[in-house]
View 1 (tube, rainbow, N blue to C red):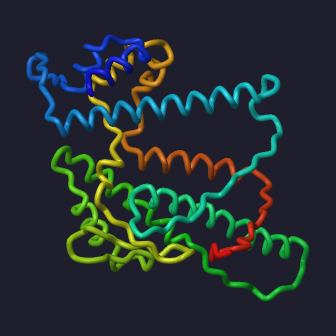
View 2 (view 1 turned 135 degrees about the horizontal axis):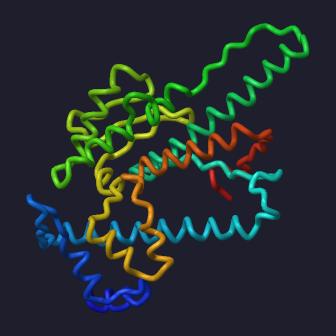
View 3 (view 1 turned 90 degrees about the horizontal axis):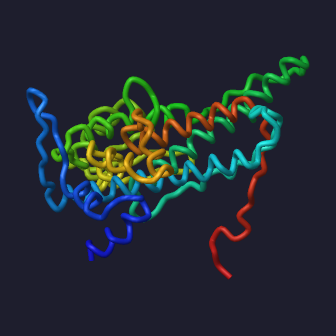
Length: 287
């Protein structure tokens, strides 16, 4: 039950069980003239607060472990010493029901495919030009327009989702889908509206079209911590407190994913890449 779960959780965070219960069932708001009011959350709001806290703790602990591993592997004082990195490229995902997770993974695939195309075709042509090797100019079509659906400016799928998430309790998945259709249906050939109700849309990826169901997108994208939860985290043990020390926390999971992928791309662009193609020896998965 809830009391048992909180009782187990609180000591691990270095907190009192009453503090944890109060943090996930209430929120404080600053009113006019500096007065502070405490409001009780509905059951639905309390579940969202619980989930937001769990995601923040998981994300903070994951980042901490990665940082500690990197620090232990680093030799010497220079973090920029020569190194060899191995990147296992994301597997393209398409299921019967595709949601926010598949959208993020397939966006990463598109981004890495664009990098691969630039390396394989672009670098090869530049080498021919530098060495004076005669060749007929080769036209190749990359997936830049598909990538623009996810991170193009001034608007993209993730920015529209973030915009819908700003609507608080009134934010709706179908309205996000409708916004996507109104923005991209006739402007980007890689986007396809599915139905009039905003419940589904498709993206024509380099590996094939994938239909995404918008149900649950808003809830999955949110990474919202109330002031009460942030204060709660800051009062825990030193490790937990460090998870909440950054006031500039990324607002949504989608924007955090895009930021991390952009950082990975910048690192890749500074390397001398070599690619290993994997062969599916049994693509049909039959004996």
